[in-house]
Amino acid sequence: MSLDYQHISVLGKEIIEYLKPQPNQNFVDCTLGGGGHTEKILQRTGPQGKVLAFERDQRAIEAASRRLKKYQNRLIIINQNYVHLEEEIIRHRQEIAEISGIILDLGLSSDQLDQAGRGFSFKDQGHLDMRFDPNSQKVTASDIVLTWPEDKLVKIFREYGEIRQAKKIAQGIVAWQKAPTVEKQKSNILQTSVFVSTILRILNIKPDNLKRYRIHPATQIFQSLRIAVNDELNNLKQVLPQALEVLAYRGRLAVISFHSLEDRIVKDYFKAIAKTCVCPPAAPICTCHHQAEINIINKKPLRPTAEEISVNPRSRSALLRVAEKIKHPSIP
Ligand SMILES: C[S@@+](CC[C@H](N)C(=O)[O-])C[C@H]1O[C@@H](n2cnc3c(N)ncnc32)[C@H](O)[C@@H]1O
Image 1 (tube, helix red, strand yellow):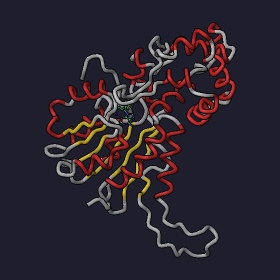
Image 2 (tube, protein in one colour; image 1 turned 30 degrees about the vertical axis):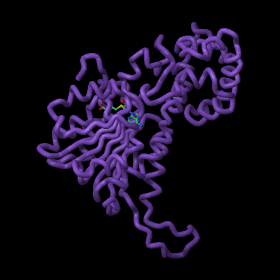
Image 3 (cartoon, rainbow, N blue to C red; image 1 turned 90 degrees about the horizontal axis):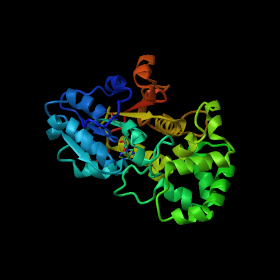
Image 4 (cartoon, rainbow, N blue to C red; image 1 turned 90 degrees about the vertical axis):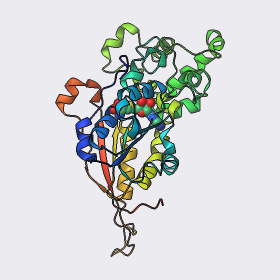
């Protein structure tokens, strides 16, 4: 792996325990990152098993390709959004016939968070950018805060950040957009530190008083901007049914999420397609003959052990849900 790419895979042991990769089985990694999970899978699926991996971030692809060089004959990396899962599987049908497991390790890598120039962290001095793939994505976080109207800002702060003061912050940002110094910046990309100071001013918080806050007041705002820039929740909603569609019978889908918004989408989706009956609640007996599409493997999400959290504190919010397909696939 590239010396300067930093990311420790989360719940690696549990992913292997639940996906159970065996010799010659094929897997899909929707979020390759530095290739940590894929490496564990490739170690166990030789001599013929393949991994098809999606990744939007070119820097991660370079790091993972270097790390996984010795498996290059069994690894197909696609520099695409994982929402193209089904079409890519159809395109690679000759190489990957049956898929035994799929992993989604959502959100961003430590490497992305720590690269100041990417603008993911409010602690850095970089540009407020936040695109996973700057080559194909046009809208940056800077574009959003410099140009979006109040109603759109309120919506993302509420829906993606669950921020109670969403309206106050959005109003403050829109007033700030009209300031002559900000007007001049609109063709440029905004500095993260300038935006953080603006947020603190809107919330009437003096930088000296920040120590009083358990989490930085900009945390949820940054989360909502990142989700909006990368359309993360819609991507997740789109990929889940595709993942179930392309999996082999008894194949498993493992999803690691890092906040309740993502986890709720996974939980609700699993619950809906695990139903064995869809008769109206008042029906005296079941007449629907509905069949569940999946078995939910773990009713409660799995969390990292205290030991993992002590080695990798960023794993602390991870939640893993696993489902097993029990419906036969329809792709020819
Ligand atoms: C948490 S990291 C994955 C780390 C990886 N599992 C490992 O062990 O190294 C998430 C990665 O998913 C990528 N990503 C996020 N959304 C994506 C999407 N819609 N399509 C493809 N890649 C995506 C990010 O660029 C990031 O590198």
